[in-house]
Image (cartoon, rainbow, N blue to C red):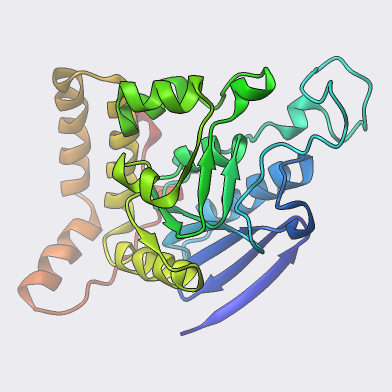
Length: 278
């Protein structure tokens, strides 16, 4: 198993074979979100998107927390975009520019320990969420007089159902890993010491499939959140026809018939036409 590590300050990236493990890295602050976390994640996800050697991404936290929400050390007007503050730490700087659902590869959130506020809404943008037994997840915005963000009012009801979403968002409750699992907020729960390994194993299994086909399916899945069945069926057809004419489709069928691993040559960040999904 090949490994390489890149230290990027508030966000680090470790490559395990074809899986990029992205870590929020402010453990002394429970990985509280600030402009360094936001810009670090943007840079890491952009690199993962463009690197053809990266097939899947895992996002987790360093230390005993995933993310303890926004860094509130700046005071009561932390969320006031017009307040005087560090010029590098504006509200705009804290807002991520590239979200996990926009990465053309599977992105798994491995939630370790506390994940509250943006630490809960950001993983919603991932394709799959798994949790450590120590995970505590809370959409606590209303509790501090703020509002859930990152489209969570639309996405969370689709993930856990309207009633559960109402309780989580309006009640600002913090739920443990088993409760999160029971409502579908996470798909599995693991011992703390096994979480990242389980996430990497899952990411590795996802990495076997054709990268461009995976990217197309991911785009359609996220598009489908706001489309009817008829609209999705209409969108799928030209994508299906395009994929069927590509080299990876030919290779996939030949590999299946010849009972050998496929040698995928296409790069989703380069080869998948964006206009197919407009």
